[in-house]
Length: 153
View 1 (cartoon, one colour):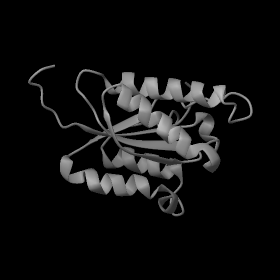
View 2 (cartoon, helix red, strand yellow):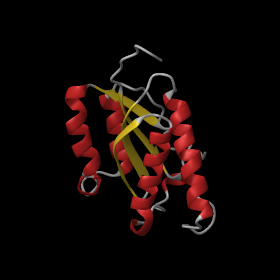
View 3 (cartoon, one colour):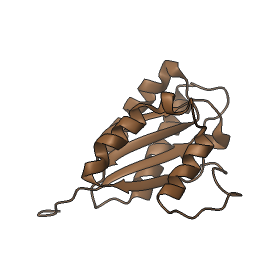
View 4 (cartoon, helix red, strand yellow):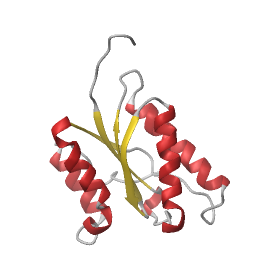
């Protein structure tokens, strides 16, 4: 896409199926490196990835010729296959169906990076469910409590 110039920063969040705490500290960084490779291989720029045992946050620069849904589907599918092939969890690992994605201006990027990098301290004060709903409210995203964070991919 010659002569196409964009600056699209996306903060994506998705959870482990049934919000189970399956992402272990022993292999979390390896998982995040694998996710970084998927995003980079698709031509996007990962700025930060972090999360907790039950969910992941990604901040990346999105190139305009791939949809957010396509990229996140690829990240989730490939990373779950990676986790399962390495037998890192008992049983079958799966991500929750769906995801959330929020756009940020260039002036917000440093704050979002700081927020994602500090997930551990943030979650000492707030559960993932509370955080997720707060983010949806903050961005004006309507949601139905009955369906929030349910299902598997």
